[in-house]
Amino acid sequence: MVSFLDPDVLIALNAAVYGSALGGFLRARQLAFRPKDTAKSFSLLERSLKKAFPDLPEGFTWREALERLEGTDLKVDWQEVTKALIQYEGWRYGEMIKPSDVDPEVVRLAKELSRGGRKWTKA
Amino acid sequence: MDKGLRDRVVSEVSRIVVGREKESELLLVCLLGKGHVLLEGVPGVSKTLLAKTFAKCISLDFGRVQFTPDMLPLDIVGGFVFNMKTREFDFKKGPVFTNVLLADEINRAPPKVQSALLEAMQELQVTVEGRTERLPSPFMLIATQNPLEFQGVYPLPEGQVDRFMVKVTLDYPNTGAESMIIRRNLVDIDSLEVTPVMSRKELEEALEEVEKVKVSDEIMDYLAEVARASRMDVRVRLGASPRSIVHLVHSARAYAYLMGRTFVIPDDIKYLSRFVLAHRIRLDPSFKLKGEELDSYKVIGETLDKVKPPR
Image (tube, rainbow over all chains, first blue to last red; front, side, top):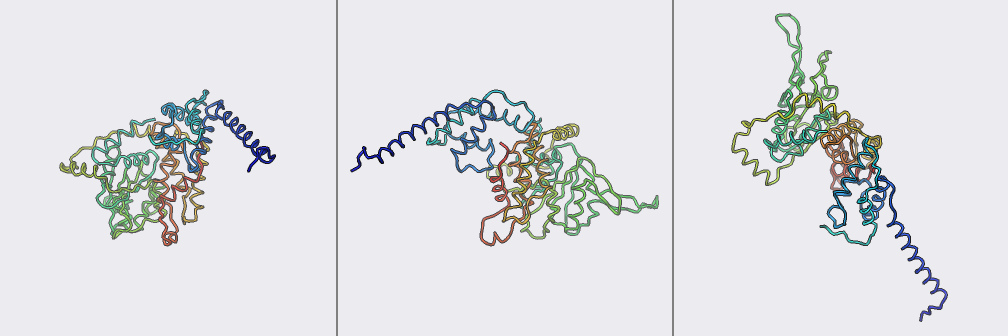
């Protein structure tokens, strides 16, 4: 019979409790993270996309990724996301000025994806 | 940036040719990208009608040559004819001296005749017996060909295939489009007048605007990486040439302009690669012999999946 006073069991229990607490803390920090500008919003989204869709090929583009996500039931305003992407593309590939504001919908999308474990069913 | 131009041309072509919106758009991309188009398809899928209708939509001079096995290069580029009055040889221009030339069934002519177009396609000039003549500007060649499996056709030399900016394969239309074709053909299709929807001035302005479309350094590096990756693939015997990448960037600029943008995005490159790169890729036949389901479209798609675009 396993005794909870056994030092080995206690160590394992401690490791489990503190480990999950640390994991929860890091996760909360990650979810509370607010990117400072549009470029950081999109790099956050890139990380979240790669995590949520491990099968996403290395050569994916923003539009391809968004097209894949638009059929899901993620609670984001797709019009706002598309608008933010167009502005981002204008700065990233064109000669437009860098959008100064953070794109809240892009950040929300990244965080929705980061929550993980969630099933995104086709709408 | 003119998305309206694209819509005008595509809808005017669609009035005559059913279900060929994407192909009309690609013809326009080639015209604005200063390239040439190869249309491939089995007989009766409206290759010639598409080319003719497109040429009529834009207010440019149009010529047509029906390629046959007994043709000579002079039948295309022209040649010297003795003038009885002046007692001198005068240069008589061939049908290539036009803005839009339809080379119908180009692969019915032997390679010598097909090669007569090489200089015209690349340098926009022809040289006959030491005399060089510039072609009118713009010059666009729209060639049609039957698939190689058909009788009486000669394969185009690699050097010529590489000079076509885009190759468009025309498949059979879907059922809906086919019933529409039947309905439209109850009236004489040739009697349907094509209205020019783009003036020469408008075209010149559009060509100038396309030149201004920005291609960032990162996009250019991405293109170079795609070309390199296509050559590194073990299944590929002949990968994307430097010329094909130049064609890809020109077509991407034209496409971005038609989509109403002042800059090229990676999606433009990915979309057009299928039409610009695939026909230049030669696969190693040993992979097919091993029973692998392989074609150049698949290889290009896989290459693009591997190369990270700037994000």
